[in-house]
Length: 355
Image 1 (cartoon, helix red, strand yellow):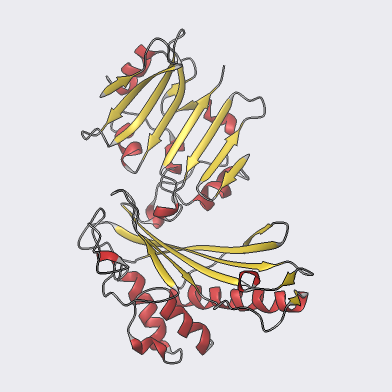
Image 2 (cartoon, helix red, strand yellow; image 1 turned 180 degrees about the vertical axis):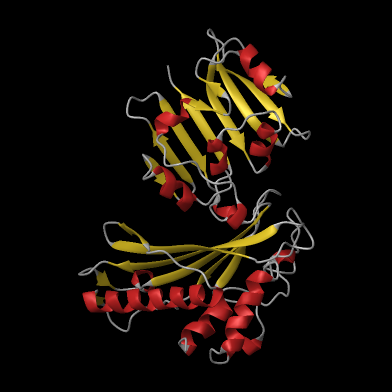
């Protein structure tokens, strides 16, 4: 039986549920959480790009609207990204008197957070990996990441709704003085939704473990491909940009709408050879395959950042939304953009070839 307090916090904090969620955890509570994420993520049904509703702090993406003090929905300004939810699970208040952080107290909150993660993952029938840890001068963090994919396609969109959970525990290091609410442990839940055209179970397989050097060719092009060879492989671009004083001449390939660029090729002035290839969005790989490009490395697009790290190993540089791999000789850079707004799924892959 899952701890009643943890489930009460979970069902209130994760999203907009009724007052019935305040009762102790039971099979009904687990059923409620499953319904929350399976039914197109109730509360995330608003259309992408829908206008904000001034009367509601959660805007029209929240159905129903039930204000919750410890949750906030982040509504991106553009129409390309889904809204996402952040919730603070632990109340934070000033301590009755200052104290020094102890190893025992840190262990208590680590155990609490691990149990909280286990409650969610067990209910949803998925496996949460070991937490990623990060140490800073006065505090450290532990982050658990896992993805739940709805078992059925959405009737509205024909896509497969998915949710990425990121649960992070942040607390002061042993021996650091705790004097205010800002010093208290923090346990936050991030719930991001994105829709996939292909269920993860049937997603194109990732290529066998490779290295950055294997990106010396990408999307049918190499560093010595010329402008005419790019056009022969991909067709004439939808538009171009660049002047004689620019470093690069850009060739943009679009699906029809100028804002829907799927492939960008940058050519060096002087040699007119390829320097950069960028493939974007779920339409990018499909567009290239429609032109006979069958590079298996395109299958990295649309995968979660953790899948990329698992396949390519630790990146040379990274932050939450970006992974960069550089070859030892400095000739090739590979960069993935994995926006928080779409649950850290990597939607852009850019390859640089240096002279």
